[in-house]
Length: 178
Picture 1 (cartoon, rainbow, N blue to C red):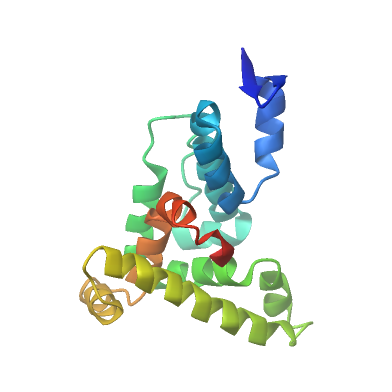
Picture 2 (picture 1 turned 120 degrees about the vertical axis):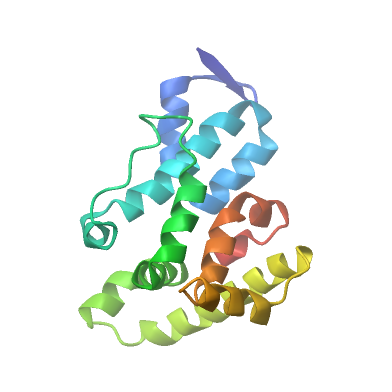
């Protein structure tokens, strides 16, 4: 099946290859700018999140790899991820580091580039600001979210809220936080 993108007719397999190279934020933009690609872009976004969390470094946190959303298109991968984060503070810490640090996650882990640590801290502050914005839109405060997280056994509930709101964040123009 051919998919129309601008003036070009691209084979769906080619479109998938292109989407695989995009960041989660870019995928959100694609799904908004090109409605015909919304389904493919959203599936690629889920797959992107799934790819990182199914990396061998995270297997021990889940106990086993997460199910592949491509094998089951109806799988609610985001709610599943949120639920897992709320249950596992150690997982939340790893995912927060991954999303905030980006490529410097490896440097921070290996200890071979301490200059990246301040950048990670600054990214964390930006991330919290973005989450606070989303919480305000829902009538909640950051303090309330943290308290709710502690009640549920994890202080990182704000991260779960952020990930569950990824499409909304890109729609609000906050994609720079990713």
